[in-house]
Image 1 (cartoon, rainbow over the protein chains, first blue to last red):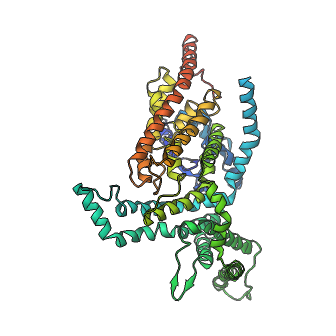
Image 2: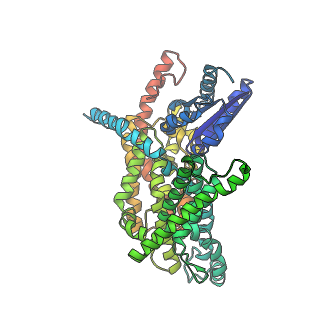
Image 3: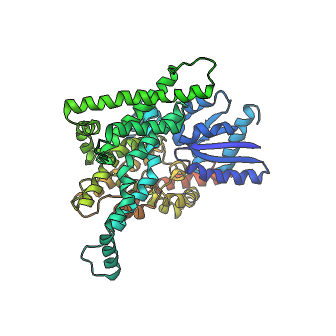
Length: 106
Length: 443
C-alpha cells in the first residue's frame, strides 16, 4: 500500500490531481492511498504518508516542510510545473513511486 | 533590448523577490494571522449574509409586491434579524483571536485549545471595558482587529516562552504528575493577566485611550492608505509578479491585506447600518471578483478562449481548466499553458488585473457600481460573488462582466501568438513522428 500526500495552499488544485492519480493507480492495479491537504494541515497529516508532493506554487515552503519530516525520513518534493498544469496523474504517480523506492520502499 | 530587459527583471525576481516572499510567506506570525482569518471566515460569511435580509436589495419605496413584503418584514423584525449578524460579524475579533492563538499553538507544539483560549482572554483583558455589569462591544469588530492580532501573538509567545524556559511550579516528586500539571496550566494565565491588565491601565492613564483605541489611533494613516488606488495597484502588482515566478503570491498579499480589508469592511457595514454613504472601496470582494476572476490574472475569459484554440495542447488545457476556473482555481491554466515563466505572457499577466483595477476603482468611486459590504467565499463564481459581496446589488455583475470582456480582449493577441508557436511545434513533432506535445518543454 503506497501512501501519497499532496499539499498546496488550500489543497484545492492538488485535489484535482489526486483524482487523476487515483484513476492511474487503479488502472495499474496498485493499492494506493492518495490525499490532498492545505499547507496549514501539513504538520498533523504528513506522518501517515510515505511521501509528500507539493504543488509548484508552494515550492518556497519545501525546505521548511522537509525539515519537519527529517526524523520520519519522509521525502518532500515539488511536482514538475508542466505535469502539474496538465494534471498528468501518470507522471506524478511515477514520481511519487520513484521517491518512495529511493528512500527504501514503504 | 526587450529580451535583455525581461531577463534582467527575471533575475531580480528570482534572486531578490522570491527569497523575500518565501521568508514573509512562511513567517509564523503571518501564517498565524492568515489561519486566524480562515478560522473566522465561515462565521463572518454567514453573519454578513444576514445583511441581505436586513437591507433588502430593493429601493426603499419599491411598490413591487415581493420586494414590498420583504422590505416590510425586514423593518418589522430588524432587531431579531440583526442578532446573528451582531454575534458573528460584530464579534469577529473573538474568532480571529482564537484562530491565531490555535495556529501559533500548533506551531509551537502547545495545546491549540489552550493557546486559543489564552489569546481570547488576552484580547478581552484589553478590549472589553467593563462597567456596572456591561461590556462595551466597541472594539469587538473592525476596530479591534489589529489589537486581536497583537494580543494573540503576545499571549501565544508568552505561553511558548514559559514552556521553553520550563518555568513552572515545582512540586515535590511525590506529587502525582496530574496534580502538578493542574497547577502548571495556571502560570501562563497569571503571567498574561499580570502583564496585559496593568499595561492597559497604564496606557489609559497616560493617553486617556485604552489599548485598542490607541492602536487604531496609531494605525489610522496606514488603514486609510490601504484604501487608495496606489495600494490596489501595488498589491496586485506584487501578487502578479510572484505568481509569474510560480509563487503563490495571492496567499502572501491577502495575508497582509486581510486585517485592513476587515477593518474597512466593518466600517462599510457600520455605515450601511447608520444609513450613511459607504466609505471604503478596496475590500476582499473587490480583490476576489474584479481582480482575480477565475483565479490570479483573471484567466476565466482566457479559459473560454482556449476551448476554441486550434492548438490541441491549448484545447486540452482549456477543457481541463474551465470548470475549476469558474470557481477561481486556475493552476491548470497557469502551469499548463504555461503562463508561469513564459516571457510571452509576462506583460498581459501583470497588466490585465491592474487595468481592470483602474476601471473597477474609478467606476466604484464615481458611484456607478455598488461597494463591497458583505463577505463571499473566494471560490464563488466571480459575477455571482461580486453581487453577493455588494449585498446582492446588480451593478457589480456588470462591472465583473466588463472586466471579463476586457481581459479576453487583452489576452487574445498573446494567446494567438502562443497558439502559432505551439502549432509549429505540433507540426514539427508530427514530422519527426514523435508523441504530440513532446516538443513542448517546461520553460
